[in-house]
Length: 97
Image (cartoon, rainbow, N blue to C red):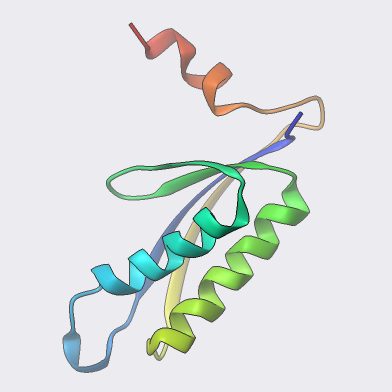
């Protein structure tokens, strides 16, 4: 079972004040390619997995956005680390119909 939930919001600076969405989309592609369970929300994406694996994905996301053309990025991250196990479904089940 996964031991970590990690939510991330990528805020890229863009050349010439371009729209940030293509840069954010590139970051989400990195998550999708990783194969970890994730949920994309309006202002952040939450991933479920092992802490070291998720931190590696964050690193790859930042590198991918820089390679895409952003000169710098702010990554706002929230982490729930529970050695006994962490699950998005378990954490939110009481809010589902």
